[in-house]
Each structure stands twice: as C-alpha cells, then as structure tokens.
Amino acid sequence: MAQYQITVDDEILEGLFQRDGGVAKLVESVVNQILQAQVQEHLKAAPYERTKERQGYRNGTVTRTLTTRVGRLVLRVPRVRNGQFSTELFARYQRSEQAFIIALMEMVNGVSTRDVAKVTEQLCGTTFSKSTVSELCKRLDPIVQGWNNRSLAEHRYPFLLVDALVLRIREEGRVRSRAAMIAVGINEEGYREILGLMLGDSESEASWREFFAWLKNRGLRGVDVVVSDSHGGLVKALQTEFQGCTWQRCQTHFMRNILDATPKALQKEVYKRVRAILDAPDLKTARLLMNEFVEEYAEKAPKAVKVLEEGFDDVTAVLVLPDRYRRRLRTTNGVERLNEEIRRRERVIRIFPNRESVIRLLGALLMEIDETWTTGHRYLNMDEYWQWKKEQQKSTEPAMLHVVNA
Image (cartoon, rainbow, N blue to C red; front, side):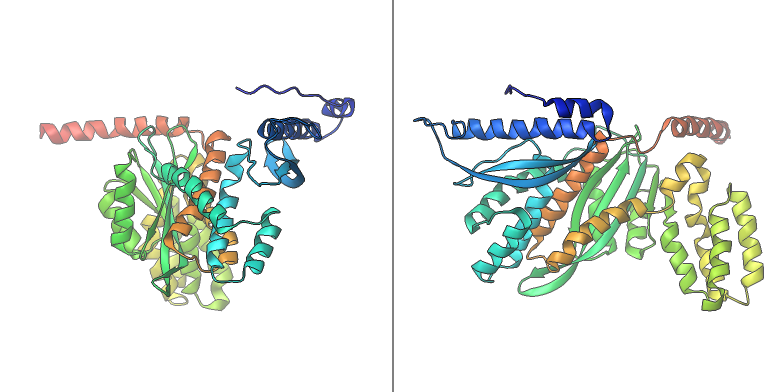
C-alpha cells in the first residue's frame, strides 16, 4: 500500500472547526496532494528535477469537480505530455464519463477529426484518438459486463421494481427502437441495488420473460412484491415468472390512465377523489371510497369508473403492507429517476451507434449509482416487514393444518 506525506495549512485546519465546508476543504487538500504524489511516482521525478529515471514531463493540470458525502471537491488532476497518466483514486466516478465519451466518439464516426476533437476537448479537457477509444473500451467493457452479470445469490430481494425505456439504436444501417429493461431490488437489509440491465427488441412478453429468467439464473430469490406499470407484455411475464408474488401496479401511471379517461372539466375533482382512495389507511376504507366514487361518477365519467374498477385490486395491493413501506413501493418513481439520468445523456447522443455502446454507457452509469446506494444509507428499515411476515405466516398455519386434516 502506497504511503504519502501530507501537510495541512493552518488556515485549513482552523476552518475545520470554525466554518461550514471545513471537512471538504481538508479532504480536497489531501486528495490534491495525493494526485501530485502519484504523478511524481509515475514520472519518477519531482517538478524540475533532473534525473536519468525520468519517464516523462508534466503538462499542467485540468480542474475536475467531485461530489462526495462531505461536499464538492475541486481537484487539480495532473496531465503529462504523453497522456498516459491515470489515477484509480476516483475511477468509479469516471466510468460513466468514459462511457459517455466513447459513445459520442462512436456516434460521430465519419465526422471530421477537427469536430471530434472539439467535442472531446470541451467534455474532458483533452482529445482522444481512435486507438485511445479502443483502449478505453477494452478496459471499461469487462468491468461493466462483470457488474451486470454478477451473482445475486448473496441476498434476498423481497421488493422488486422494474421498468423500461425506449432507446434508438443504429443497427444494420437502420435506426431501430429498442427497450432497455432495468430492475431495482431492495434486499433483506433494506438497501437498494440495481440488479441488472438488458436490451430487448421490444417490451414484449418474450423479452420480459427472458429478462426475468436471466435475473433468476443469476440468483434472484425471495421476491414478495413486484412494482411496475401495466404494460401487457410485462404483466404477463410477471404472472409466469413470479407466480405467488404480489403485483403492485404503479399508482403514478394508473392516475394518468384515470385522467386520460376523464372529461377535462372533471379532472381536478376526480384526481382528488382517486388520490383519497389510493391514500386510504386500509383496503376496507379504500373499497368503500371506490364504491362511493363509482356511484357518483358512473354517468358523468363512465370510462374513468371502468378504469378504476378494473385496476383497483392491483393498484391498492400495497395497502396490505405495513404503512412505512407503502409510499416507497406504490410507484416506480425510483426507477423513473434512473431513467431521467439516462435520458440526460441520451438526449446528447440521440441515436446510439450500436448495442454495445448502450450497455457500456447505461451500465457504467447504473454501476456508479448502485455503488452509491449500497454504500450509503439504508433505503428502508426492514425490521417491521420481517415481523409482519412472521405474523402472516402464523395466521395461515391453522388454515393449512385444517386443510391437511380434512
């Protein structure tokens, strides 16, 4: 393990105890000194030092910002003339940036070298040759693939949230729409994990079944509640691959379906009434409120009434759970936020050059977010859930014994 000699200015030390951001300033100072020490080790020479062992020359620094738990750090990353210096100090934060640059480079294939240089210069402070892009792919792809195919057998995942977004990919000279399917699990300890990403030809039942089978082959187990939208192919695949699990239909998507079926003049009042149903303290109350809604709007908004009656059981499934888990599990909003992060990058690229670039970019980004989740705070305290599960099992035992004796 490398050892570095670190110095701390009096001003930084005083700020540690006297003002906000003092810890960030201290960490920033330490990290910048480590970066300088690493480039010195790489070049085998201190600044301006004359030595036969020197392996190259410095070429200034490039400023980078790094968001950490203690605040935003401004780092001065050294550059060397041959462009070969790299640091693993914050490599995990660079993976998605590398994948983004590679996708851009592949996207602009055929554009003038000068234009490519401008894009990469603005994004990362330097330019990339084709050989550099190839080298980045060789280094990044195995990391992303290894993460995306890792074993899931270490944990149980009682809660599973799934969603897909449509991307445009160039294949065989044509631009085609493909579905990127993503699964987020909440494990038995209450931590969120991004379980995997797969590209499908469409959101068909066959594509979703392949995705779920892939997750189970990697060790996915213990699923109790699955949250998703009501896409036909997805729902059919869930019924086949997760028999016995509770399906919670995403309430956000459901509300859109209700309002789309409601006359515009009634949308505000219908929203409030349906929201009250979904926020009911228990299923009995929710059903009572639904019956009142059906009676009042049967003639004024018959299509909305039909949507509510047909979807009621699935959209209120979460009400059987203890109250603390309902808000987090009633929608796919957690996965939707991942989609927003993906869309931010996809809007720049617009059309992915190939399938490999999709897995590389999305996988690197999701891998980075997954590491933040699994090393951060717990998403849910699962103690109450496991106690509830025990009580549920006890309540069903007498009925099971009665069936056996009969």
